[in-house]
Image (spheres, one colour):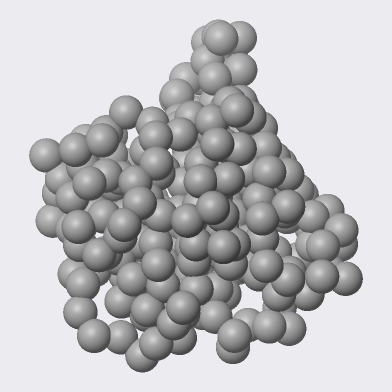
Length: 258
């Protein structure tokens, strides 16, 4: 069952900053992807919801967004990605915005992490972004937007997330490389790097003392929310960010390492 934060932000009147834009958000059946989808729809975008397994939840998000398209897609499969993007192009004429949000994590101490878990995380979180970026370019409009979702782990490393941290660091580097390549087309490529977000995972994985230790490393002394992320996503997807590319925007409450 979705948590309260999974259901935010609720659909409602926006400001039309993404009016007539066609946006694909990968992994958008829940969490940050669902929140970004609702925010984009609120700003006037036609939102294409993608999911790997949670079709029922994806259709709930699509209903919130007034979306006409829900797409089953495993970002590790080039065929899946190409089929989804081609269908979007055939239906809407082009894709204007791609948000690479789909991701997984498997935690373990470095010496206990299995090769299969490493491959699973890297294939989804890094290779998946690579495939989506490659496949969207033929169907993306000039002056389009690509937003990759990174993580605080990719900047500082995580104590039990070596594969996830490596993948997200790779996403940041890929962002810079792609921004150079598509700059002549006016396509802006940026990365959003969230810090610790309050959700079901953090609630279940952090004991009281761990929560307090982590929170003490945040200058704002609180965990983030989905609402803290979506404003930046809307901004980077909009015309207001037309001179911003190749950047990583960290949204982490002032995380620091002492």
